Image (cartoon, rainbow, N blue to C red; front, side, top):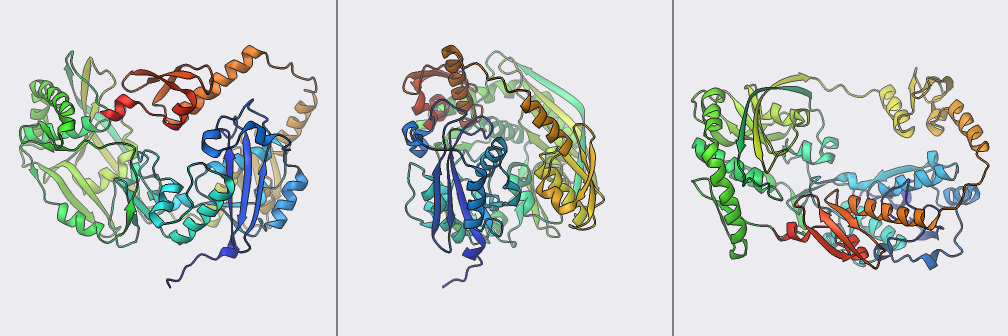
Length: 558
């Protein structure tokens, strides 16, 4: 049997069920804790205090009547839980950051001591996936890939704890890499694409020893295409089609890099494929810059894309001439040049390049060139570097093409000292409200400073980590609370209704990642009217059903 590095007695698993995604504005409905070496389980419902009703029954099965008789946690409850489950000496496992945020803010709101004794580890940090992964890198989907049973559509805290423990054991402290819904077990022999640093947030934790790259961009040329039938398509069709059109008009030579990339991917252990809520539209790219759909069902998308291509092709010639003559100076232009840096085990693929220049194409409304510093540095390999930004901010009236020259500055990445790590912990645990100086050891005094009012005090280093707040601000806060003894008037029916509508709109906004706004809402069982912020479509759906499927059907079909 394969040996594992996970020791059960070093961990407990925690899961919470909540009434939404806001740890400040939504109630904590239940807390579950599982001790894997003994099988001991804690599960407790908590009363509604911030919200008038339960909005997440369709997710966790918890109804308002289930919370009748539930009481808030007391300091004695917290102390007993810490002792019974040995929380001071074990790492608390969570999948995602939501659990820790809700626990932290619940204890803070109740003025309960104990959070500073807890050490959390979000093992989702070991899953490297794109921020555009569309929410399918879930605990349930990964459990299915590993063959872990008892995955249920309705989530409960206890079952989620058991699933998370089984998943953590299967992952065995190894890193996972998710690309195009395919899940691989990561290893250090794999040469990782440097472009993942910008779209795969967790990558920065797993690529050591990269130098610091800072960059600045200066605009050197701007082109605009004005036409009444310009259109921005959902998904990344725009970027793919524009890049292909530019390549065809420049008559670029595509470098054969696929064989290396395939061999590189074979270094990873394939685990399985995640389900996708989107149906991919497969396209062939033709030499004249147009596209053809692979499947008959996508012929309408093909026609719309090709109409868009023909509009661009009529007016894009000045840009093409500028790229050929002013950027690449008449040299042979290549597409998909592969640049491998064995010293740091990363690779880069160039959109357009020649022997003496590199041009990266970015199809985004606003360009933060600093986000692409590492990618541009490893693509350029000492050559002058340029970025072509396709600006959609004024579509459908016009599209902007902005060419910028990029200057790159390199400095060595300094290894973090013990003192630096301590100062960072203080800032993290205080949520940025306290800084420290003069650290030599955990039992030595440090000087702490409040970032709000410049209050300073001396305290032992380990005590500051346990109590990362300004005592002067806390004293003032207590005095302010004493002066607010007058009871607040109860909310009116209209105010309760407005709060209910506001909470629902926030939930839809968070679940759809800003893709859907609510025009009308009357209740969880009533039909709400939603609007897509991407294509402008409006439709009606039952409010609780919309929470389960928070996406635009028109965009999904396209």
